[in-house]
Image (cartoon, rainbow, N blue to C red; front, side, top):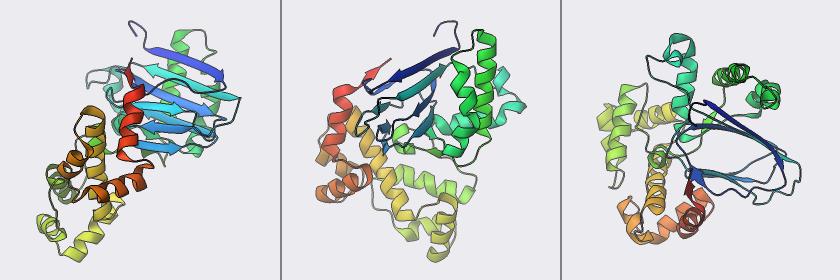
Length: 281
């Protein structure tokens, strides 16, 4: 982006044709009137509704909006790519911007905002590309980001293991357990092992883990394994069988079944979709 810190593209179109890609700069992407489009961010694949707003702050996270089942000929897409200094000594590293820093950190996995949050910033997004002076465009965009950082209900899209994000948690007990799973997901992990690490009974630990993560232990481990497997499908030429066993699945058919149930496609289809259209900009 050179000396520029904002790039704004406000498009009205009938179809999505841009391939899956990743880039160094941060991106906020808004889409409306595109129900039926498939949005892929990392190993997340979802069909969107009338409004979609996603923030991505990782240079390694691949993403794309695909036409899929969308029939609309009145699609609007506003893409804002930005390059803000974020170190502790930078302007945005100061106390008033703590909520922004937290949001940017969460958006390393891709952050999808609910319709309620989109409506709060819709008017500012709608007029952003019409602002002629760069200073005022930056101020308005910062306001959009700040409003989004104060909204509740935003959810991460890609798995931590796919996005290569370090495990984090406020609870030391849960963090110890998560770190253990992160390092040992390829092996058999028993509930009793993890309960012992947390210093709790198995029944108390199961409730404690779900309270802190929103998922039961089995689903959490499966998601960790699937994220790692998805990354290997994208980044290596290893066979699907080899990947499944190296990520902790006990047999290939079980891996294929779980992968298709969670991702909506087979591992081979997932790999093909990435490889045939992937570019870096």
